[in-house]
Length: 196
Image 1 (cartoon, rainbow, N blue to C red):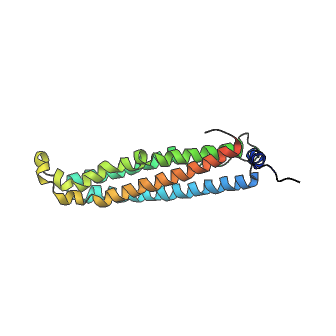
Image 2: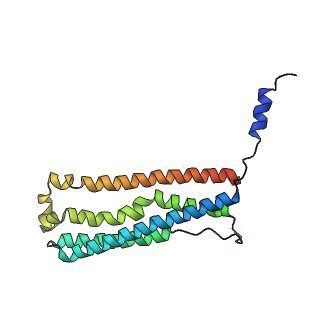
Image 3: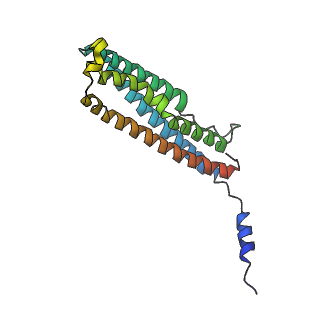
């Protein structure tokens, strides 16, 4: 008997369809993803509430008018962040077993929704906080009115480094998480035979 032709073997191997995973496993994964998003959002809402309370107190207690305005801007920015989090990235429970929407379609849609929210995190999460933080950082300069630019020093810009570092780290971590979700979406699309 002769050895099998490697070209025929490769051709046969390429025709094997990807088997759909067990639906209970998919449902379990969708339930877990839903719980993770709810937990993440709960922590974000708590963080927003703390920031709102903290910076609202600053808005009343700080001696500088510019610093008080900056603190109020941060509190309002945190309200915007919480609203956008609810609008863009709230957790949507998986459909029950009797629902018309298949669990794979639901899970793909939720992964895409979270990916989109994470990849645009700069505009809806970080940007609302930046004006208030800048006003607070430069409040001592802004208190000088029309000649404020004369009071800007190198140390003012050095003081921005921690904020820039934290905001950059948050943005990078969210971009990385968005790429991970895209890989999961690609895997689901390969399973259900959709082209992205």
